[in-house]
Length: 337
Ligand SMILES: NC(=O)C1=CN([C@@H]2O[C@H](COP(=O)(O)OP(=O)(O)OC[C@H]3O[C@@H](n4cnc5c(N)ncnc54)[C@H](OP(=O)(O)O)[C@@H]3O)[C@@H](O)[C@H]2O)C=CC1
Ligand SMILES: CC(=O)N[C@@H](CCC(=O)OP(=O)(O)O)C(=O)O
Image (cartoon, rainbow, N blue to C red; front, side, top):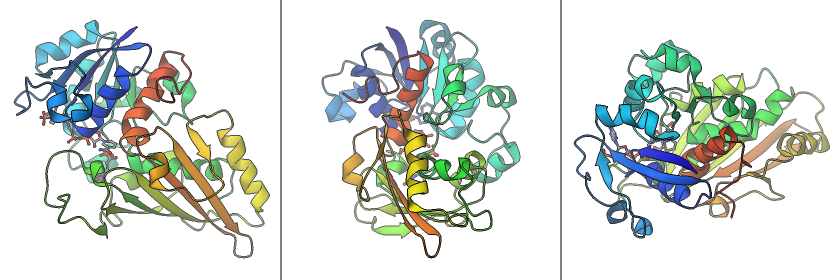
């Protein structure tokens, strides 16, 4: 059994990780942590997340001493914390034998100037950044297998890259026309902390972060081509539906397009190639990415849709996929029951 600690366990992705660790056949929960001055310190996780009422896990305030001790006491540390906390703690956490999986955006962008522009603070952890591996499980398996620090991808990039990488890797995108990604997320994407924007009465359906969201450079860095990305906040709890319009290279046929997706995801059980456009309800509370696409051969434009659960494949279950790869277990272990 591998021992696992979760820092930021009271949040949406942290609590999801607690549940996934509980149901995983080779993981045991060794500790659940919140910030030093957390209002939830000392509570049982079930007091915050009723679905975990059966789990005996106390939310312990983190300290420097605990951070250091964890590096030798556990095998894996999950960081389900704000970007700043992950950024500051990574050198300590990755200094021992424990491997670290960070759900924040702190170690995804290798270009520190771009990072500062989009995250609003300077990246000063160059050594950790150099060794971090982007945990897009279906695409970076070899690097993930040998990594000590995983930067788990963002939720929108997971949906977007899963849809677009088969096209980019096979040279099927028209180099002169940017893919246009319109994606709608449920409110859990914004985290558990209350805010006016995510309050029940305020949420409707609106675009935000237009032409400036921090996931744009993340998608572009791992796709290798610029995109237009527009996120939207929707009035539902969980899930992301990304509808992506692409102009393909000349003379690509529907059968060629089908073959590219089938080849890319053959033997990848988390990606489901659907025969109709997926709904968020198809993937909510699951680790799957559902994909469907359609080509207008006359114009050369195609529309690809990806549906994921942002808290699962967009964060927690993708982190478990990475752990499965790092421990040489089938990627769906503990996820597809
Ligand atoms: N929600 C989503 O769909 C996704 C989120 N992410 C990323 O994952 C991370 C966690 O997100 P999410 O679960 O939504 O966030 P939440 O706001 O729901 O939870 C954050 C957690 O971190 C704890 N925390 C806050 N500040 C600190 C600190 N300084 N030190 C230690 N713990 C702290 C909080 O508890 P307390 O404040 O009581 O200490 C809480 O447990 C973020 O970086 C987010 O950007 C990534 C992909 C998808
Ligand atoms: C609806 C909503 O607010 N979603 C979040 C994305 C959550 C996510 O993927 O988190 P990272 O910060 O780790 O990249 C946002 O747009 O900021």
